[in-house]
Image 1: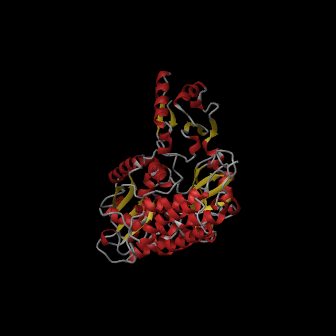
Image 2: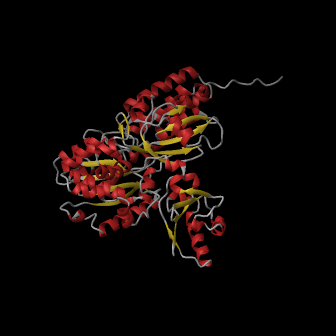
Image 3: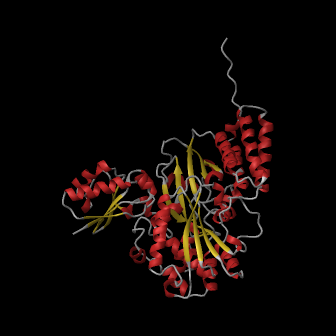
Length: 518
């Protein structure tokens, strides 16, 4: 009888030798005359355990990790094909605490299925949401998404249903669905994990969006730094076409929808929706002034839904289980689940999907296990390179949109980057200004010039030149950038700068000169 062994094809696993591990398992099985089928699945998101190898047993999947090619002979020697004990064994995968305590809705299949098997996708609940949508009117779909409370998971937190209704109500001969997969924030990898580990859920979500608003064409805009995700998405789209999920008649209905992947050149500013649209049109990736809104005049001047991967990938579960089911998760106006990406100096880095409402301290200390170095946590940056730095004194902050806004921060794409007590927050503030200067599209003065002046001001503070005056100047500059920039690149750069200045003033104090001994 053949034994099934799962080895991830996710980029994080590939980076630490997943292909070599899979090849070693196949070689060892052949040498021992054993019938082994290796399935390349997505990652569960427990990145500190990659390469995570799983074996299908009568009791469920048993996990071993982190596995290196040199570990493979000893795994076979320990009878790991039957779930045998080994120093790398973690028991049943589903019982690993990091995974067991999650609420997986969007990532329910990630790490479980073969990403390019439609049979697997259907077996684990795929396409039920799309089939339900085909039995509804467009207006009913929009209402269901609106009532679910789903908000943009890309960072802005704008209600998805309102955006869809605006496009649905617009009159035009052509409408578009654009998936923003230009995942450029530091410490974020949720979009990539979905595209590599469960691409059909994104295809399903985009198709439902197209039916809801009357769009017949969709684009996934991603970055050239994601070659594996691009390859998987392209293959999944082709498979979906062959099975009639995409094309002139979606699952035999009167609705038409097709899509394709477009690859950007890696400009951070193209994560902003209007810069992304310019890039899609073959233009330079610069920010457009709003209005008009993309929902009314977007791609090629037509009404366009621009949603993040996580927003669109959340739609199938809403249409499958209903708005009330999804709305019951979370707190306040932050409904549903959020895939939080734990990164930086942290013991258990990875993806953790949970309902809104855990505290920042629970995420970093209880789930993430504190710093990898074992030193005290000094700061946590949430929301990418333009997110605020939170000190330990704010670890009671609830992980939801409103609580973070009240604390002077933003959730963004839910990337959490941890720093220990060796971090220099003045240098981190300087990095934010320098990052903005490098990545600015150059269209507006506050971002283009303000960021360059910001680097100069921070440098003067670091050299002890008129520190009080320059700190005041830095605050004034941040205020100008925040309220005068055309988009979030310049508008959000003040978050890391001002939070570093506010919460870690000691790092901005001039260093006293040590007098030379006589």
